[in-house]
Length: 290
Image 1 (cartoon, helix red, strand yellow):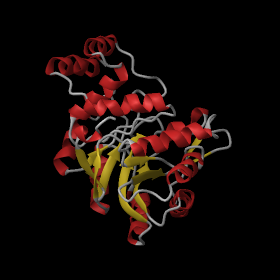
Image 2: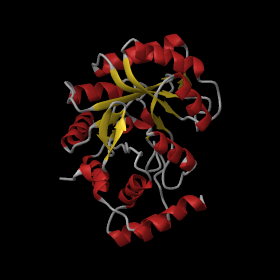
Image 3: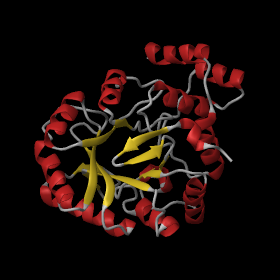
Image 4: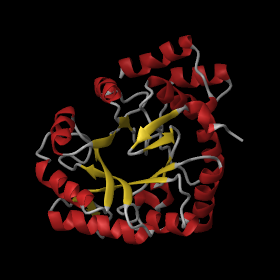
């Protein structure tokens, strides 16, 4: 069995978690909408992740919607004491699968309450406010009102810790004046390196950085250099991409998602990979070229 402790730990909220976690988005249907094709398979993947030592799971009520949270509850409730569950709010899904901003005080409160109900929790460990000024990436916009509303839910005890997702450096700085920020979740991977400076700044502040789409998302990472390095190390390209992220900075927590037991085991095995310096240097050039 893979030893996830080899990847080390980092603080997420008030817990030190193993740096290799699991993202539940792919447990929903195509386009992150509707039920999975294989519900029993989804349950098995979640249980296998926990058995392997995963102690933090990323989810959201707008995956499905509701689907992934209901599957997590069915698979894992009552939850292990050391499990940290992270969700995100700030959007709703249209009947056509669209992603629609939902930032009013009422919408944010309802989102937290719905997450609690579907997960079977009295308080959520971490709630990320998913900013929607541009659905495709971070964009400047005021966050004071929605973040203050979420901070109030924290004071009420419904939320233990708060994070930001799809956020700019300025928004993070502004957010830290309102409430403690436990983590930042933005798109980042071997080829998408726009947050390089931000990751280093957050590391100095002791704040976790959680890259979504660590393997490229709906369009998996593909690069001749990545394939070449992976072949030389006798690893899969996706394992090498995850190992690169773990070596990039100690504050990076990974949440690769999959609905396949085989892919889950492959992803988790990246925790044990130590990339040699020459391989890291080659891989770094992929992002520079992009």
